[in-house]
Image (cartoon, rainbow, N blue to C red; front, side, top):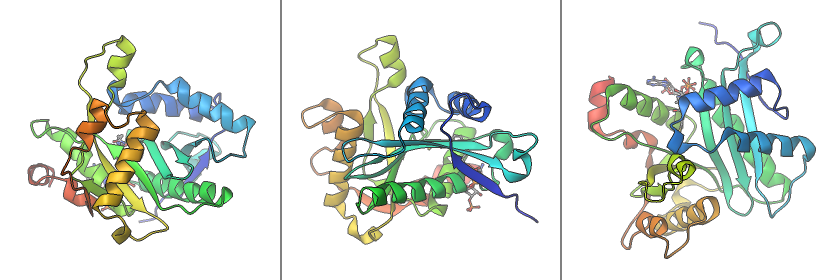
Amino acid sequence: MRRERILVWETFDVNDPLTQAAGDLYEKTLAPEERIPWIWIEKAVEGRRRRKRHFHNEWTKHLLLAALESELEYQPRLAGYAYGAYLPGFGGYLCYLGVADWARRLGVGTRLMEQFIRQMAVDAGELGEPLPFVLWESRRPELADPEPAWQLWTARMRLFHRVGGWWIEGVNLLTPNFAADDEGEEDADPVPLQVFLRPVDEPATAFDSERLRQIVARLQQTVYRRGPGDELFDQTLPPGCQPRLRPALNAIPARAVMVTQ
Ligand SMILES: CC(C)(COP(=O)(O)OP(=O)(O)OC[C@H]1O[C@@H](n2cnc3c(N)ncnc32)[C@H](O)[C@@H]1OP(=O)(O)O)[C@@H](O)C(=O)NCCC(=O)NCCS
């Protein structure tokens, strides 16, 4: 079987129909409590268009788009997108990823993640920094959730495994509920996320428990602005919590393996 060639590029144009299609896909594939307003991502694209060089004191954000090469000239359709940033002095942070229904299982998710990791290495290189890792988060379904939710989780874990990602076992990253924030609800339950790490310039063995604690703490501080003394920070890293790297496929509990086979 001949595999379709998948092109991935960074968009600098918020008015491009494929960038707009990424906005639609973003809203369709992510629950409101897990996403920031799309307009913030458009602002990041605008910022990149105006200024291509970046500095040590700011994130460099990228919106990558994917399409099948065979369709690009005549009938371009968006196959998927990835959005994330290089965090100077820390690492790469992939915020969001989505593949259109019609384009799933063609390798689009893999291409987008691999290209994002390469982009992070370029960003780190431009600042003269090493790239120890690229990180991302994902919300695991509850055990009682229906089968499609577990099938999607399995798809994600296979994708993460395929791109060399490891699961940080032993940590529930508690993050603010964006949907409730929008409604002005202050007591909404936080959103618990699992964290994944793809080592780049350092081997997986370099990420021992203490290092992983530091990385998760820095993630809370840098991305969510939560520090020690804040409830979400303290509950994410309670005393005695011993995170460790495990293969991403180990994040699929036995129940999900049974229902998705
Ligand atoms: C998860 C998602 C990004 C996967 O994208 P994709 O383009 O279909 O993934 P790929 O084709 O690159 O496949 C990567 C791996 O996942 C596996 N996979 C993909 N879909 C699968 C499914 N429905 N069931 C089981 N495995 C699946 C592929 O077989 C491949 O694994 P393999 O190499 O072991 O065969 C896509 O399903 C999606 O966009 N879902 C909705 C949004 C989302 O969940 N985003 C991720 C948020 S963290």
